Image 1 (cartoon, rainbow, N blue to C red):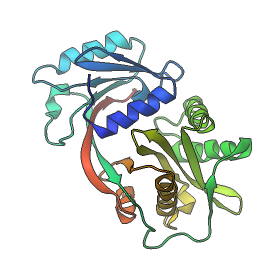
Image 2: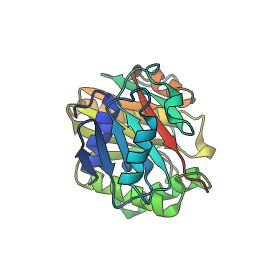
Image 3: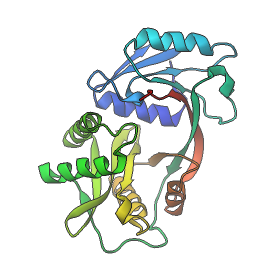
Image 4: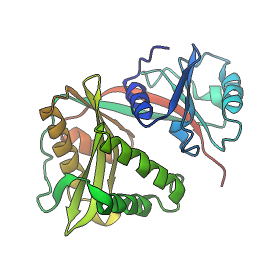
Length: 259
């Protein structure tokens, strides 16, 4: 199955680098991450399209592929946000994210000049990375420490294999913001997990990190930077402010586990 969506194309390239399994079934892909079965978007079906009346059949297909899953996750290889009828999958949430691209980035209107911006290296940095994520997602879906530990292991392995770099903003030696940038995907570099500690927000840290990480990737030969963002969240304005523009939509249906 040829993937049209830039968002999913880069998602799957990263998942493959992390060791996830992708099986082509012709009209859909089955993506599995055996090492992290609670990772919704590492264990899902990517559908070529969602034809009228096909929703119930796709739910059956998901259950057959992931009989022990507590979630249901279906990605759609569509790029038009208005092309999908949410009623096809009653009881699931249709999510529409913005796929953003930039061939160059520039400083945000108010760049942070206090933080030390550098890549994460060594056990102490990665421990702080885990602690930052745990502080952000405590009590939320995906905030389980086992899940976060599996995510940390995957992103550190990507970094140490040379496929990615994780950048951090440090204030007085403490990691207060971070993001990942996975490179070498058809001349693209895809941002991952732009995160800022709640106590350090509104200080220009995210915009400064996105700018400096992107500039480093372009200097190293990346042609296009890719970011996926929620169009209703404040963060999308940060990305626009450093040079990103919306290119297409990324569409998915999710049913979260019942706690």
